[in-house]
Image 1 (cartoon, rainbow, N blue to C red):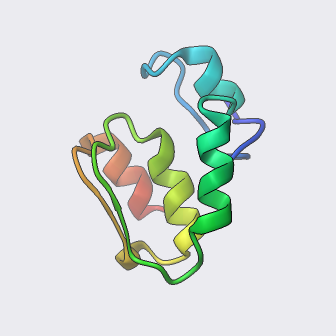
Image 2 (cartoon, rainbow, N blue to C red):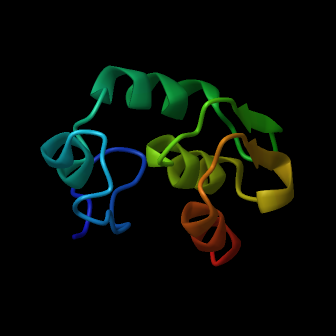
Amino acid sequence: MRIRVGINKGMRWTVGSGLGIVGACLGTREIEAQLALTRHIKEGMTIFDIGAHRGFYTLGLARLVGKLEKFMPSSLNPIMFYFCLSI
């Protein structure tokens, strides 16, 4: 399912992967935090996503910094790691 708004807009979220299906699928999960990230995270920054879990913020943060080598998720499940490599 394509995410409709937020830092993951246009990306796909697998239904049933946790995190409150509706909020993750729509992109409205913790929307205030997502908006704060878009204001403060800039391309080229080095980001550590501690407690990445299912990776809701992982793909959006990787998109914001622009280069995967500037982004390090922690506790990322192997499937989400694969998707990060394909960005």
